[in-house]
Structures are given as structure tokens and as C-alpha cells.
Length: 437
Ligand code: C5P
Image (tube, rainbow, N blue to C red):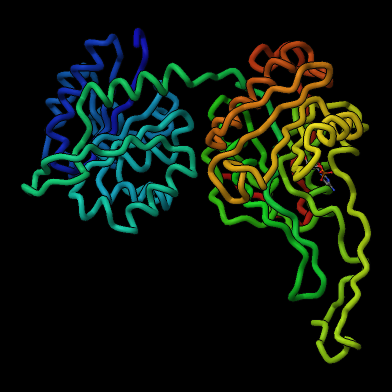
């Protein structure tokens, strides 16, 4: 880890007494460390110990005292730009809960909220607290947001009880940090990526709609992975029950028509588009303004007339300037033939085929087993992988494709060879809702 820079956030758990040894381990590996600590961490380890070992001033509390090098109000923004990653060790159940909910009321949680690079959280606590549903739900939320979590080890705890909750061995934490840093590529730095995710829902009346089983997890994983590789990601999401990944701007939409408008509005100022959304193919011809009463339906059957929705992806391939396009194909039979046909007919550059009837690719699951089709190339079948792994494999190919000039040929990520087109900011008139987290 030569010349790597690590920010170390220490919170108030008994395992904090081991953190000076973690600093020593990093220093031994050639890593520059700076520490931040909460007021309660001071009960277990002194700022003087950490500043002596790191050779730098330690930020303590949200409002560092006058005279310290961090006495100004924007220290968290300055520090957030420093270093290659933030490690929070030990992370108490309390700080895990606050991170999961975006609460910033101490130095560590404030910095974490402002931090855009990798964050490794090392929880350590009593095993009952670790196993509590609230803690586990908060950890899932953190993972969804793009935090790495190094689970605690099973063993003897400070309380004298035995179970999961021990801070992992110092070398294991340092190794985990090295692995993350080795794998963290910034090969999409500066690139603007538009990703769609989730289903669209098509209203029948004010109460009912036609929908599909897409969970949105695949598209969210693509958005999260791209943001971690340095891209500016805008995620256009249908109705899903997922948290916005860190560093991703989100636009919420409901129907295919809304998604179409949002994507077209954002098209000009993106360098590439990944359409992972399961867009409805049909929508009711008319939407009843009032709830359709059962009594008005004659003979026990109801007819619903549907018309085709705009094929967003297909229309993007004809828009100028042409942007690199990735499509998804969900096929339950004749997969390879259908995917090849779709690649050509939709005019996309990469197509990701998956079959929800196959093991590892089920709706709502955390894994996927896909085959990636490229124009002129041989299809590449990937085994069952976590959706985040599939996302990175897909982005690897997209980055390579764009580096060769891409179909849009407008930019090569990280090289800034050509400037991406500037566009309008999202208009206020749109029914889509935009937020950044
Ligand atoms: O035709 P099919 O729905 O199988 O194509 C799937 C791909 O096309 C996905 O990338 C999806 O996001 C996109 N699509 C679209 N507009 C539609 C239907 C699908 O952009 N109306």
C-alpha cells in the first residue's frame, strides 16, 4: 500500500483500544493515515496517541476546538477530498444506525456523509447488539448504499460472553483495505452515465396499474458500481424499494412515458446509457379518471385495451449525437437467438441477456447469471455472480468499448479526449422527481 492515504474514523466502542495497532500496521505498510474520532471514542483511546502515531492532527468532534488545524466549519469537506478511502473502525451499533439514516452528528458520521470514495465499515459490538434486527437492517442499508462491511469475528467479547462481535484482527482489516484499494478503479472518472432501473407501472385507473416483477437491484448495482469507478451517474428509477447508492443522482418516474421523457431530457449530457429498466411494453389506451366499479363490468369479464409504449432504447439508437448504448434482454426461451436479434433490432452496442427462470437469476435476487453480447464479438457467458459483480463486468466492457472510440465516439473515460456535450439541467416542468444523496 505504498503512498496510499487512509482516513481512519474511530467511534466509541471498547475495541477502539486496538486502533493504535491498526495505525502502526498501516504505517508499516507504507500508508499515510489521518484519524478522526468521536467524542465517545476518547473514552477508549486518546487523540494524543493517534496523533503521535499518525504524525498528524486528529479531528475530534463536529466542532473542532479553536487553534486546531481543523477549526473552520468546512473541515469535513476538505477532509472528504483527502485520501483513498475511509475506514470506520470500530463502528459501534450506534454509528452504523446513524450512517444508515444519513445522520451526521459527530465527526465520523459527518465525514462519511460527505465522502465519495470507498468506505469500509468494521462493526464491533456485543453479539446481542450485532444480531438485533435493527442492526442487521441498518447494515443491509449500508451495503445497498455502497459501503463495504467487514463482518466482526466470532470470539470472546469484552462482556465476557462469546459470539460474533469482535473487531477482526488488525492484519485482516489492513488486508481488507488493501483488497478494496487494489480493486477500486477510477477508470470512469469524469464520465457521465445514465442508468435506468426497476419496472415501470402503467395506470388503469387512480387505484390499479399494470406492473412487472423487476426489483431494480441490477440497475441500482450498475449505478453504484459506476459511481464507485468515478462516473457521474444519473439513475432514472421506476417504483422500487431501494436506497439511492452513494454519489448517485436519482430521478424517480412511474410510467414508460415518464421514463421516456426523463431519458430524452438527459440524453444530450450523458456519455453512455445503460437501460436496465424493465419498461412495460404496453399501456392502457385510456386511463379511467375514476375507480372502475366492478358493477359496471358486464358478464364477469373485463376488457382492457392496450397500446404499445415508446421503445426508449430503440429510439435512443437513432438520436443524434449517438451515445454508447447498453440494453438488457430478459428472455425465458430461445434466449441466444432472441438476444442476438434484439442486439441488432434495437441498435445497441452491448446487450445483457438474463433469464429469470434460471437458477441465480430469479426476480428480486442478489445474484444474476448473464451473457453479454457485443456487435461482431462472441457472446460472453458469466457464471452466477452478485449483481455488483455483473455490473462491474458489464462496465469493464463498456469502458473498453468507449476507449476504442465507442459508437458515440464523444469521449473516452478518464482521458477527456473529447468533451461531453453540455446540456440543460433537468427542467422543473417534468413530472419526474430528482434528488441527490
Ligand atoms: O424488447 P424488450 O423489452 O425485451 O427489450 C429490453 C430492453 O429494451 C431493455 O434494455 C429495456 O430497458 C429496453 N426497453 C425500452 N423501452 C421499452 C421496452 C424495453 O427502452 N418500451
